[in-house]
Image (cartoon, rainbow, N blue to C red; front, top):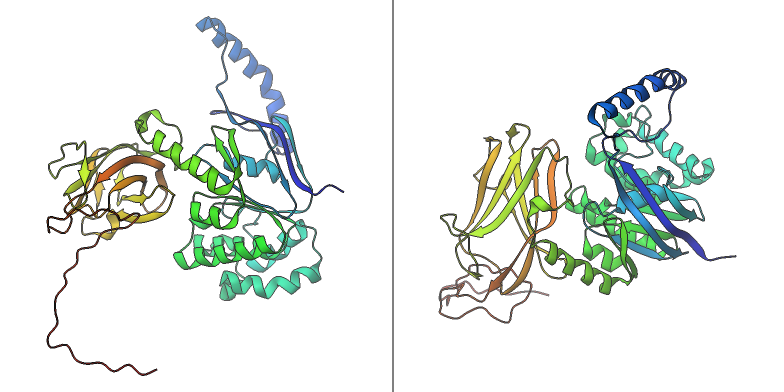
Length: 432
């Protein structure tokens, strides 16, 4: 018997931009579509004659000739920028969507945690959805009952377990979805960005549970932008770029290759890139470092007064927007974040197009190269998100005003500090 859990061979998935994807239809919809089809064809023919050209369908390949194998008990990471095809790959493996060509063979019952609430029935309660998901996995009622209390405790929704999930907050939804996927013990677990949602405590809890799942011998495919989680959990990682496999191999090597590509792409204008996330109804188009007067800087030093300038445009009124900039080092670890909602500069409403600036009194970074991830939301939806939106290099500078440049420190944020001799400090006796 083969020990292969997942075999993907020349897998490709094509989407029609702006078109409708194939799906399940009611009898009424099928009859109406059949009646309308001749008229649609006639209209297309007339339009083609009027313009002198046949109407062309615009398509995009979300996956193109992807091939790899995952053995039983392996934990494999899937990494890549937005639009690389990671989520599409998991949807094909979960049988949510069919490939355009190629094969995907999955040996074992599959549990998926993809988009929030996938597999949940809105009208059913949390309790009923737990049993429903277990039944879909082929589990017996007794098996589900043994895990039920553990699932509810992990999700922290005891008071709402008999409430229809359509009334759940997004946080409750996410907690229950992860608890169900991780605790019902599918032989293969497909997880898409679970560590990007919820609060910090929940993310830490998820990471611990994912570690337990990995040690239990189950097969896991984990999609994440959190390189720390990928490095900690996965021995092998697949790097996707524009629907194609760039590399498959040992996780540290593949992660470094991916991060190097982020530095390269960050040097291109955001307007020329297609790897953005979010709804796109508002967009970040420019990011650059500048003086306090907004003049672009070619070089920055530790401790220098710097403004980060963001150029944006929006299709909708920008009410209560939040801009976030997260600084990452060259191994994908977040170092600090600049968040407009945490300061006194709360934006009530912004013009549809313009620039905002984040003024830093002193650049708190030691000398090395960094990346910025950027996002824009309005409290209702994520409007725009860039992974590796901008890269910059910091040179050694006189951060502390002592005439001594800060050198030899890596991956640290600098903090203003004052040292002094305390002459009247009370004497404290520590007891063991």
